[in-house]
Amino acid sequence: MQALPQWQRDQQVIEALSSLLEYVGDLDRYLERIAASVCSLLDIDVSVITLCAEPGFDRVVASSDGEEDNMLYTLHGTVTGTVVDSGRSLVVEDVRVHPGVGTIPDDYLCYLGVPLRTPQGDTIGTICSFNHKPRSFCQDEIRTVELFAERAAVAIANYRLYEEQQRFNEMLEAEVVKRTRELRAAQSALLEQERLAAIGEFAAMIVHEIRNPLTTVKMGLKAFERLDLADPDRLRLMLASEEADRLEDLLNEILQFSKPQQLMRTDAVDLMVLLQEVVDQMQETPVARGRPIVLVGGPDLSPVMGDRNKLKQVCLNLIRNACEAVMEGDRITCTLASDAPTQRVCLTVHNGGEPIPPEDLSKLTRPFYSTKAGGTGLGLALVKRIIAAHGGELSIQSAADTGTTVTIRLLPEAASI
Image 1 (cartoon, rainbow, N blue to C red):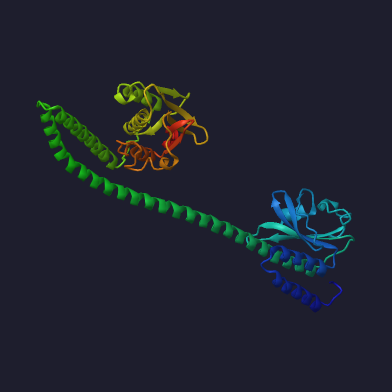
Image 2: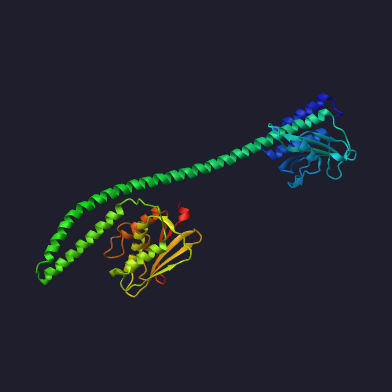
């Protein structure tokens, strides 16, 4: 380059810079073109571009001979480290004469290093040129390499900015998707709450309208009980009274189901204590007579944060259903344990009665769906709503060899706060 007239050297530099336009958008080839141009313009053995991968290390990302190994190299004690630390260009005409500036690769004696500086003044790498034989560099040659170093630094900074923008866009897109999903879920929950509230208000109105005439009818039936009736009439009166009682129970369940599940989640409920209270209460009822209820509890179970009265209602419904499903002498097992994968408190109520057909399992928690002849189909539906309001899960499994198991999972107190 030094042997040519100045105008020819300038022309070569302009042509080399212009050729870079062909590789805009492909950073790897762009940097390779810069390394090859520097090597050709300086008529030197090899030129490489390095990037500071992490503090104290660099990585060769482009080479005039096309052999980037992409390995990490320490900067400590090297001429490249001197350039990075100083942020200034460095010329070593003969490393044997100036060994204190740092080491260079074997078989090379001459070095020209130019830092890659961002517009903010940060040194992010170097353009390093090596020659087997000693030689000098004029100011025009150093300025030429600095010009290419400026192009390389801007291209790298722009590419990093582009990558950051892409990552930000991906994060933003993921956040938008997440927020949209949450918004739709919130809207759906709000609409469901409004729907249930409207249904509940309508159901409550119907229940109260029916209760008044039903009360009158029951008063009349009780009056007939005091009369001396013939056996056929006494039988009809008994059936009518039973149906009136069943209708009253149904109205109570409908009213209970129609109420919004506004929980008083201020209690740290010890489910073992609550279950023992429910079991003691159930043992005195006709439905549980002759059906032993066994309570099994795991050690060190955490309490759950919830509405104690609502959770008691859940336990009563589950144990009553289990008792109704078996014959006298059959056992009901209630088990409390910690569900390791989810860290939830797990309650299972098991009975060995007749298996529930698979096609009925998914329908059991629907309102007014029951497999029992006299069932209202509201017990499990109410249980499901209460458990959902507590942020828990309800599942039912049934098979001929294992019986039927109803499982609820609730978050422990620490996770509920």
